[in-house]
Length: 447
Image (cartoon, rainbow, N blue to C red; front, top):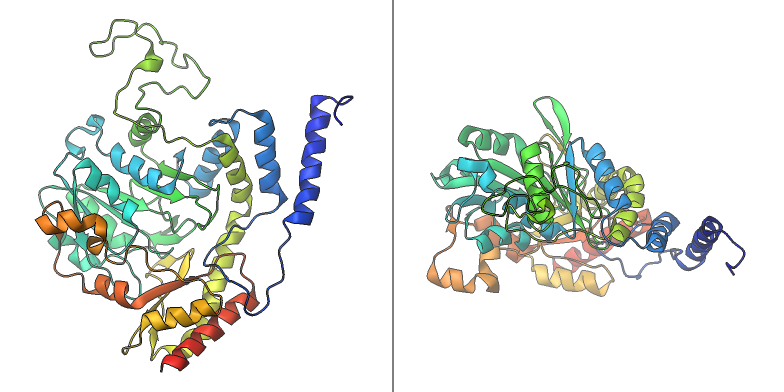
């Protein structure tokens, strides 16, 4: 087929065939009542597949030109100076936290035994990095119906060992950044925004609209398929702080001191003429390690998909908001039986899902069973109360390794009474209306 073609002609023919293949075999089916409605799904077209094949034909495989393009364009979208792409949102949280442990931060570095303020009503890998490092999570309750940290408990959570606050914007709904940022500024604490479920959310602070993830010292994102955009697997950490950026790049890339990208040599011009610690003078700078790091990079094929997704992303955000509003309007008459979610003040969320809390003794499990039988996928608010998960059994038995501020009454209620359904941008009006109809039926049946 390609014998008499140039490489470019063969390349272009392959991509043309990919477009044709996508048009035939990746078409969406029209929804009809009773069809399965997942809580999330990929939204894409031929552009993502073309980029993927283009990258595969190049066969660079590790981070390359698409990675550089994605980091640049995501930083531009967020309005930050620096962006480092990694292999998952969980790795992004690991990288962001470990950045705070660098000795380059001197007295502000997080040490083992220092405390990090967070919540138990969320995803485990927001908390896992500091537990594994040996820092102490301090758990604060959340509010309902915002499902975010109760900022009135922050001062009670503070101690002389507190070094940072690291919490997520729950299902796209920003936490009270004004109060949390003021608290961190008052006590000279780091603030990491776990933005994995909230990419595209906006918060107004000091009279300015800013994207969530850019108001604290660092923000993190996830590009796992259910999230706001996808690379299959992938994540990112972003910041405006050049020192934090330098540290996170080192931790991400094996702990190296060198900033050369893959395949690049001697960017600084001093590869063989410096002294580093007790290494021999002139030791190759590409093999000098200033941190105990990792390899958290993505492949260029993942970044290629991300570049196509970023072009669609603003429309994704608007569709999520539209779907959320349509579903909420359809459920307004049920507020004697359920609590509907509310946006945080000063926020315009990029909703990841639609949270519902049952009240007046309504059995959440029976509601979920009915909804699932009708083809609608449901999810819990992740760990519910993380401290009651099996991974905490040993720590809970010993009473060591974490602190709780007051009770976690709302966290426990969420674990008992709360679930959520999706509002992803691939949903049609018919799908949203069907979800509202089924939820209404479930509550009438349980009434």
